[in-house]
Image (cartoon, rainbow, N blue to C red; front, side, top):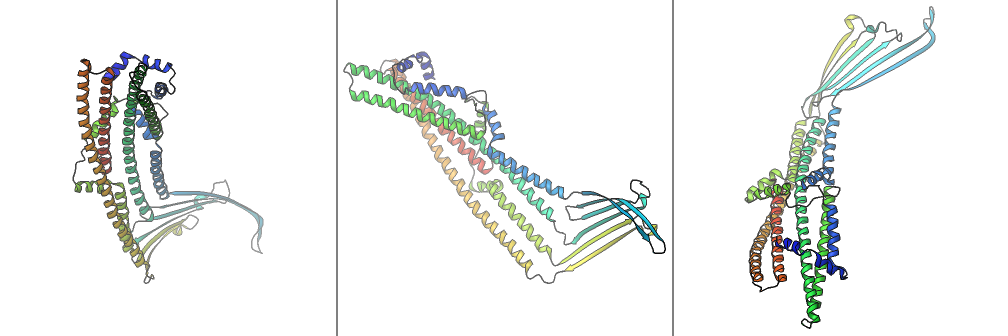
Length: 490
């Protein structure tokens, strides 16, 4: 741009000379310190690397990662409770010498024994309860003789046959599966939202950085005007009022520059903290990641009818999906409660084996079938059904109200989008006008009709108008992105 070339030709000598004249609070000193701080902040940390780091370090995302891990641990813990459990016990016993037998044939003896037991159990997801018990006794410890005659085994199995309803574990796993799906969708949505917010903040920093450069040029022009008027005042060609007005203009530029600098530093610090990066971030409009992101934003189409917007909300909005998930589970609960009924049939069986018994009697098995009928429950079943039905009705109302509220919010977003598009059209007209004025000013300057300062002011006005247009375009782009994210299109 012309301003950059002009600054390169003129250099900073005139500004440093003015600074040396002792003007307190010189804007140049402010800019010099500020630009030095930027040089310390800027580095090889690209935007893409910063976003990648932010997706790993952002506190909100870290919490959502942890929520998913906690839910997965709950599932693992529940599944572990359905698996086999085993317990091994051992016991050594000793009895001192004592009389045994009978009074006609008394015998004094002592004895000891070593016993081992192994217990195992498992409850399957479908409610089959399995338990085993194995015991082994060595009556002459560590001799390991006759062990095949001193062990016992028992297997117990039980299950409800009617009604066949999901077990508590099945119901818990069903709920956890839905919660995990919602949590993962929420994580993906938050990551997309963060990326949009970070790119918006990054572009804002680029625009603020440009405004800092403009303020530097404005300061140069204001100082030059002040110096010129001071010389004219000394010759009697300018009044005191003109000089004071020029001094006030310099001070106003200094104030605006400080405000922009503070805004930049605060925006930079907020972005750095939210992304969780160490400090260095390279600000560049030539970032390939940024260009790819903006191209993607330009390709998104949100110009759709109200019915399609409502359909997308119902399909993708997490709040509505959560309500529907709760409603579907409540409907399953209602069905289970209705099937619970009054009649229950339970079955059980066991097998026993005792190696110490004679061969024909070593092993035997038992089967049982139980039938129960609850002919009076004090209205408990009816109350339970009414409670679930009431919950379903409340969820239906909540869904309807939430959908209406979300549609209202969406309409507000679309209204703002349309307003920002109108603002962009105005900025586009302003830009075209500024270009015409800059061209006219250039022609006048080349013909000696206006001073160099007036020409530079026209060029500065053009660049500021170009920046205003870019900011308006940014606003429209990010309006589109946030609407697309709201609808599940991003």
